[in-house]
Length: 115
Image (cartoon, rainbow, N blue to C red; front, top):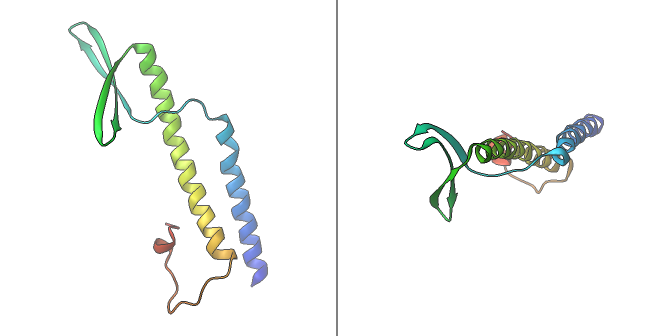
């Protein structure tokens, strides 16, 4: 039984390493949302919206700023998904490989944050 666990731990470590590799190549990042609001009274209107201390803040952008921020926000979202998966794998390794305290019933995957 131990052999199966160690093999599974090795697979998880390889998956974790694969997730870690692209992090070093991540470009600029930013939170929020950008919108192309279409032509307005003075021409095209681009907007960046985000939350600051619980309040929504919007900033007008040039087209160049809009494109740059759109890419940075996309990078941020990919980074967040990668980190979420890395956390899940970390918890799985933790609960699969280290000794647990005695419990009356087994912890479910939802409680452990594995799903």
